[in-house]
Image (cartoon, rainbow, N blue to C red):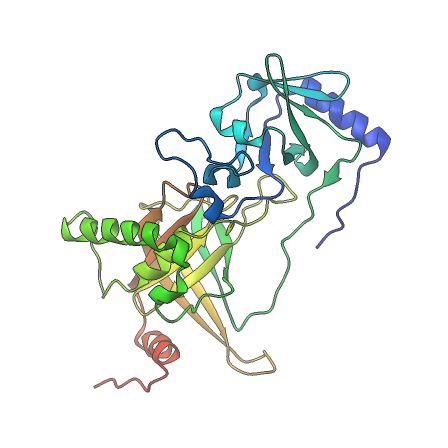
Length: 327
């Protein structure tokens, strides 16, 4: 991970000039995010909290502020004109403001304040670079998803998400109790889509438990990239002999139903990490799952189109721990 370096005084002045003169969108998030249990105290009808110290669940999500919604003063004060309602819960709280300067990710932490015509952000003396969180980690199992675009091949890393049993269906008990009501509603919706014929589902549907678990968890998103435009890796949360579920959030790419993909899975077979098994699978997007209550999260189900017999055997034995009988 690269160093989280603070800008020099001269660099800060250049950045302020850049904010004043260019159309630079900002992203604002709470520095200390609320627990979901707090958000459950929000009135579903009024959207107002029962306690002024508590904030709605929507406040955990980043809010984008376009350049036409703000004015940057010479003193380093950013005035927000007609700010979106989603910004209001930030008033009087510490926020993290992120933006890109010549494709380099920067951020500062400050307090959202109120003035006569709206909200204001005072740019502090300390502006820092977003640390580069893309690191090479060693896993017993990794992968990539790739596709062809304009005579080139685009590959996106896929890494297992800690706490998920990639080769086994989620148990209902693994879903936080506070999330189970929402998870049940999502699960019922997905099952209804299958019964109505809107979604073709091959298999027993146990992967849907993993999907609703991920989509009802907060703060599962990849951190912002230190370099603008870099695609963040997907997390793998489930793999069986018919499909793989990729999960993502802020910074991860959108996959398309109409594009063929290649999923390459790499398994480490020995402790010295030199013996590996590669499984390459042609696949398509079977379904993209989302949750309106957690809008940045998504789960993408990749359905295998072709799987060689020996690869099927390998994955089957990896999942079940049983010897595959070809008879």
